[in-house]
Image (cartoon, rainbow, N blue to C red):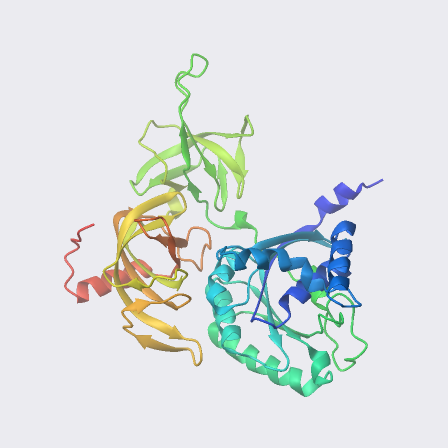
Length: 445
């Protein structure tokens, strides 16, 4: 007989993020999804029912299931994402519940950075607004493979099909112009429960899936083992004990791909080559390991390897560069300006850097580029050119969301300023830009 644990382990995992403007009903949608999928504990539901009665409401206000995090934000916790874990018979889920206010758009960057799907909520009465466009742009920049447009509060527009069709068409056209590969539009009423978990009896004109049905059946393609191997070194292990006098291992989490004993590898950015002599996982030697396992790698040659180095296959190693051109979302309240000194954190490596240029800022209303803005304000999306003090082994973000992303950090207090996504051929474009500007490569860090 199959146990519940065995059944759960056999299901696939989907990471998804929710986003929506203020008062679009996102908290109610999340509460309805958890409640109707039987993912709310009895004591939690009783607490919600009690709080709802105390507020004079006859039915449970499911939005209260997420009110705790909202109260924390009101107390000043502005960079946070609520993660909800639940499961059905068909799939396990990790839900990243991101806030809706424009000043918290940066939270969506955090929540959607590892998501395979984003649910963007729209109020049927208001349609697509600027914050909707911003959420779509963030999903596109983060290369989230699947986007669900949940047109909420259909009960307040008499479940009118033309209203849904107009919003779906506008959003889909906008998302496609951003490069979003797939949009699934679903008309819902989170308050009543229409098309969230159970099909609606009020919208017989809609023949598509409910939100949960789509979440359960959407293809999951986050197999990191299919990507080129990347192993950022987090810690060098040298016990120097009598039992292991010559042991030297490099510990970390495999960012992508597969590592095997005998593989020819290169340590970046130094470019020194070696062969994997052994792999240790959970105290045992193994012949193969894959992402996202945490392992210790032993090399055949005694070469200089330290925290922040990247071990990659010699035949498929990224070219180190000091010039980074990337699309970024600025997440700090203080602006990012040309000439600003920052720290750039890429996987386990942090280096000094300078913002050389901010070529453009994206105008979300019409997707036009505002050239040479000189600075990026909070929640702005734009292009930046950064020169680092030391070489970095970045991939293009389109090829690897893990090793193609980075953070810009304020060196004075450690505040995260900007989340960056390296573009394809970024090194070539940066080199061309430097040559055109007569840059001799010397910068004062």
